[in-house]
Amino acid sequence: MITTMAASCSLVCCEEERDSDKAVIVRFSNGNVQNAEQLGFTMYKNADEANPRKKSRRIMAAESDRLSYVGNNFGPESLKCNNLCKYYVGVLNKATMHMEVHCAELFNMQPVIPGEIEESAKTQDTTQTYREKVDSLIEAFGTNKQKRALSSRRLNQVGSDTLHQAVAKAANTVIDQKGLEALQQEVAETEAQGDLTFHLPPCNAGADRPENVYLFDDFLSPVEFASLEQAGTKMASLTPEELKKMRDDGGCLSVVKHLENLPSVGEARDKISRCAFYLSLLLNLARQRSITRKFGQEEGCPRNIQSKLFKTFTVESFNSGRVQNVVSSSMRSKLAAYSLALLLHMSHMTCDITLLHRDLAITEARMIDVAKSMGLTLMKLPRVKAEEDGVRDTSRQAALVLPLVKYEQSMDRPKRKKVH
Image (cartoon, rainbow, N blue to C red):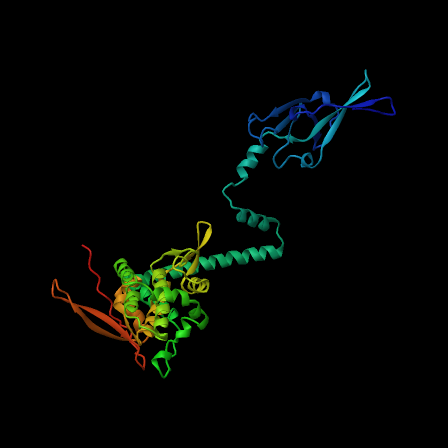
């Protein structure tokens, strides 16, 4: 493209240029150069051509009899205008009167004093954090308000460190006096007691009838109970072979026991079959560690029952970038309490807690603690005599009898075996 100008001169736009073809414009920070011919200019470029961030880096050096000057197009000392706009230089050919327009790059040339760079590098402490550097600037150039805030923050930091040291010293003293194992046992008992109290079902201790102490509607509302009609019908229609398979698989012995003794007809049969299905979900949930949204779908669990289980008996945990529903240890205690209360309504206010603790996969001692926390009366009943060894197995029963039993917390701790 050629543009004719008034002074009989034309502009010639050059072809696309590379970075190495750019013209260089230098500007000296300490003044203007009187005689540019006395300066020797040298351009250096980065040797790493494969790196897209480094291949365009340039260093311009100018040598004179008195001083040396250095400028670059990268780093904090470079001119930011090179990134904000483009510069062009026109070179006039007096013979043809054509002016070629080339892309240009600006360099800010600064004098280099021998020894100055080494001293500044030594004085700079690279080990300081950003906060320490800011504090140093506040000490040197900050306002009175900033200096007072800095002094207050440092005093608070010293006080916090002193408090931590005092707490650590006191903790070590207590550990030395009581022993670490005794303290761990006390903490475990306190947490266990707190968990049980927090996760018990709603209790009406002043009720006049056993059925009203733990209300059935607190476990299954009328709407939820009605949604279990189809699932309850399916449970009631299980054949003896299917019940035997459930018994052999284990994990739902309490459910099988009630299904084998279902009333023949009537409202009681319908209620126990629906409760048996809901109980099977609770027992299955207690044996899981983490569950997905597909839980209970194969068994025909209604959507509102599934949402109730997720909300009541799981906690949300963030793992591997996603939210999971986890059945924690405290949630297992809650499942044990609610399963026990549901079984009381299914068995005329009695329950076999030996079968229940096996279905829940928890220890018998833990199950007994749950029953005691609920104020139930505990009994031992002998089972059928075993044919092989002639030994009678005992079954623990829990019954809800008014008034509720208040158990005193035992202060005796189990003796630990010494490890030799």
